[in-house]
Length: 501
Image (cartoon, rainbow, N blue to C red):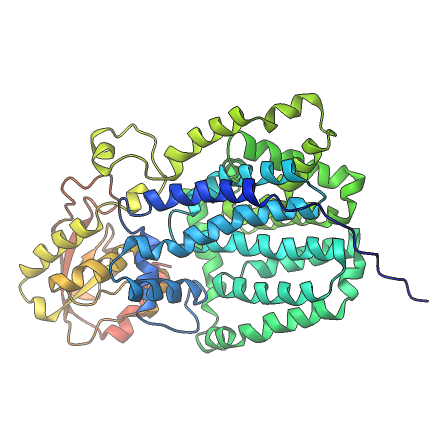
C-alpha cells in the first residue's frame, strides 16, 4: 500500500518591497565601505592562489581563488571589485532568510523580522565586507535549507535536484556542507519527514553533487589528501586565537548578533523543537544542535554554524507574528530594537571610521580584521627597501612566514622589483618553492628558527615599517637574512612546511 503525497500547502505572498528594501540598505552600506582600508589578508591569498589556478588547494576548493582572479581581471587592483561577490552573496542571504520564514508559514511581518535580523547579524554584516569562504558558505547553506523547506511544503521533487546543484557549488567553496547533509540526514531519519529520504530525486541530486566534486577529489588524492591535515591546523589556530572549546558557544552567539540575533536564534531553536505547527521542520533544530556538537568536538571555528542561523530566526519570527510568543519576547519585534542592533553592529563589522582615525584613536570600536586590511602596501615598500640593500639580492629568495605576508608581497611587492615570494604556511606552501639558484633567503616573520641548520648564517636585518598605516599586523615584523644554503630547496622546503602548518 502506498501513501499519497501530501497536497501542496499554500503560502502567503512574498514581502518583496520591505524585504528587498532591507537587503538593499545593507547592500548600500557594504558598497559604501567596500573600498575603505585595503585587501584583507585572506583576499590577498585568494589573489595569489588565483595566479596558480588548480582544481584544488591544500586548504580549500577552487571557487574563491577563481572568483578573486576573475574580479581582478575585470578590474585590476580594485579592492571594490574583489568584494562584489561577497556583497551580492550577503544581500542574497537576507532575502533567503525571509524566504525560509515564508515557507514556515510566515506572512509579511515574519518575513520582514527575519530579514531585519539577518541584516543586523554580526556574521552577516562583517562577512559581506570581504571575500571569504565564511561569506559564501552560509548563504549557500541557506539556499539548500530554503529548497528543503519548500519541498516539505509543496512536495515538488524538482527542488531536490536544485538542492543537489547548490550543494555542488557549496562543496567547491568549502567541504563543510557535507557535514550538514550527514547530520541532517540522521535528524531526518529520526525525526522526519522520512519521506524526503525516500525520494529518488534527492539521491539524484546527491549524485550530481558528488559527480561535480570528482575533479577536486582527484586533485586531493593526487596530492595526498592535504585537506584532511587542515583540520589539525585549524584546531590549533582555534585553541590559540579563538579560545578553543570553552569559548565556542559564546563566540557563536556573538556572531549571531546582539541583541536580537542571539535572542531570536535561541528562541527560534526552542520553538523548532517544541512547536507542533513547525514539526515538519524539526529536523533543522536537531541538525543545528548536532552540528554544534560536532564543531565543538573537532575544534571548529564558531562561525561554521552560521549557515543554521536563518531557519532559527525564521521560526522565531513566525512565532512572534502569530502571537504565540510570550509577552516578554515581543519587545524584539519593534524598530527601536533593530535600530539599536544596527548601531551596535556597524562599527565592529564595517570600516565606518577613516583609517587615519583608527591610528589616532586606537580605542575606537573597529572591525575585528581591520588590522589585516591596513598597511600591506607600506609593508611591501619597507621589505623592498631592505631587499635592495642585501648583499646578493639576485640570488635571494623572499619567504613569508605567514601566507598573509607572502600574499601581500606577491601583490604589492612584484611591481617594486621583489621576486615572487614563497611561504611554507598553509595553502601557500604548494604555490611557490624557491629556485635552487637562490642560495640566500630573506625571511619575513617572527620566528626564523626553522631555518637553523639549513643555512650557514642567520642574522636580523631590520623590521617592517608601515609608517602611519596603523593598526597593521605587518608593522614591526622582523626581517632575517639566511645566507649560504646548505641543502637543496627540494629537501629543505618540506621541513619548513611541516613546521608551519
